[in-house]
Amino acid sequence: MKLSKNISFKEATRSQTAIRRGIDNSPSLEQLQAMQNVAEKVFQPVREYYGKPIRINSFLRVEELNLAIGGSKTSQHVKGEAIDIDTESDNEKLFNYIKDNLDFDQLINEYNYSWVHVSFKLHGENRKQVLKAIKHEGKTIYQNG
Image (cartoon, rainbow, N blue to C red; front, side, top):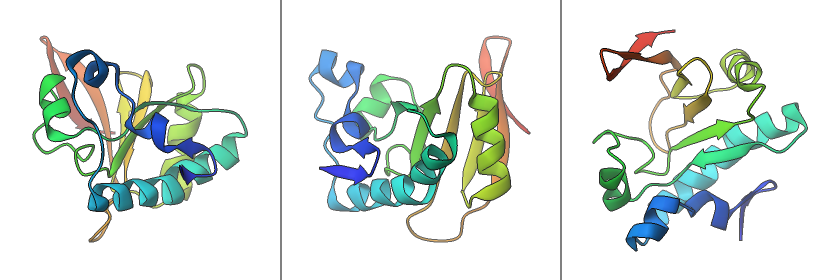
């Protein structure tokens, strides 16, 4: 099964932590619908623009998995509404393309473009919130960005 032309269900639900801990990272129907929405509205347009494979670092995280990795209690990954993507060399380019051309809820430059987090709501209005994550005194803080 594919969520879009370039995202398989397997890569969207795969997690090394889930595998190691025996966590079932299978989506509910609503999570699956949200994932398809993100894949179609955000990932696929970015992939078409970039023209090369883009690694998915994290997509769906069921609550148990999100807790296991220390994710935010309000993480949109739990709803299937967020994806973390990485090209290893062109993350700033992807970030700027998304910011300038696509609708999104949150767009986060994670630690000087180490990867890009982007979310898209299944229901409701997208905020177009642009942030950057940095470490400050050992903690992650988010700034307007």
